[in-house]
Image (cartoon, rainbow, N blue to C red; front, side):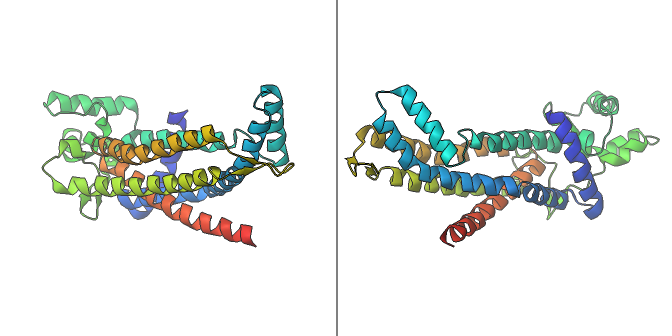
Length: 299
């Protein structure tokens, strides 16, 4: 499935590259188009998150009332979802789509010759063998990136091969070579620019998410009111659970950027550029949608 989606996305990225003749600009335009296409799903997700947060109060009341009757509790929970016109699995679709998209684009950007230029695996393996025979080191994870880097040598070796020209991708973007992998070019300071920006954007994105969750959790810690009797319900166990979630979120805000470092430094800069632009667009999207949804609720 990932290969099929990568192949489909490859047509779009190839079209954009032929339009602007620069791999970096094509990646930016590609990321923007994908974001626009997924905008309706993002709007639905944002609204669902806000609606779900508001439902927590009612859910706590149900859990308190029927804590000794699990069957009745589950029935009332389902009735609440029906009344609010929501599904317990409403967030799953978005998560699945994001995962499919992430892995498919990873396939695309790590193998642009296969999915973007549509060169056969037989020809790719032939070029790899030629380079290996010359003693040139080829990455096991990103062999096609190495082929692009060795375009000039392969062109001399295969003067009659028309496919060789497809390896001549313009990877220079604002002075950065997007075919480079930081791990393999530790002495070149330019390879750290995009990964560092990507890490910073990841940290900002995660902090925004954590802050939103902390705000929701703080609201959950307030006293819940039983609408029928007006009785105040104090739920100490729930508070302890929320505290644990908040601590986990704080830990994640530090762990995820650290994980981002390991990913960004072993991937080609072209892939890191996609992640960076995607993070920037996601941050802007959250800010704009959050403001728009708040204004819609007020009206």
